[in-house]
Length: 117
Length: 109
Image 1 (cartoon, chains in turn brown, blue):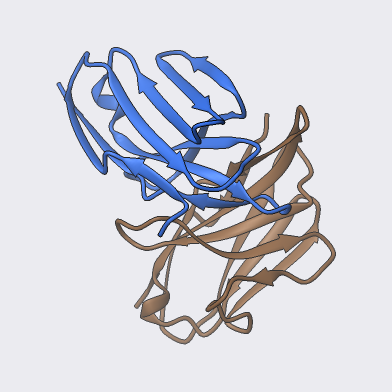
Image 2 (cartoon, one colour; image 1 turned 45 degrees about the vertical axis):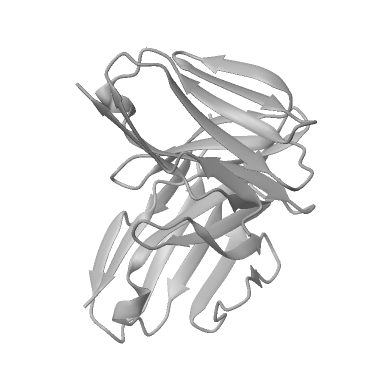
């Protein structure tokens, strides 16, 4: 149980286009999902916290107008990279929280590798 | 200073060796996560523990809440264990994670 999927797994796009990444919790409902970005050989960096039915909370330095987050249901959150540029090329990972035995566990998606040409 | 510190940063072992990766944290936490990231990038949650010890196959995780320290052990290491191992501690009431910088483990045959 507790599987999180991401789609697409890999995307290549031209500079200036927008890219949507989906994050789904397949067998549980997640009130909170997190979006991370990871550059090569670096740690995951939290971009935003996504709560179902409310606006996402962005970390300092992350442009909310560039990285649009929609958490439309308890099993789906989407991240849209608008007007992508080569510096947005990165590995984007989502996670979804679920309560297990009184503790909240984060389950990670497999990630989406974005390459902007 | 990162609130979660891991050591070593890099670790090379021969197949069959016993591996230990350490994690120290400076904030009070309710539980600590150990994650595994393979070269392809996908992250697998190995353990979440709040006290004592947990075991799954050849992997063992221990935590000492008083000393704010956790260890991940791999017994009889195998080349397929080669990956980056990351410890992460939740911060705040919304369960954001603070990540260690990761330990790159390479197990040679």
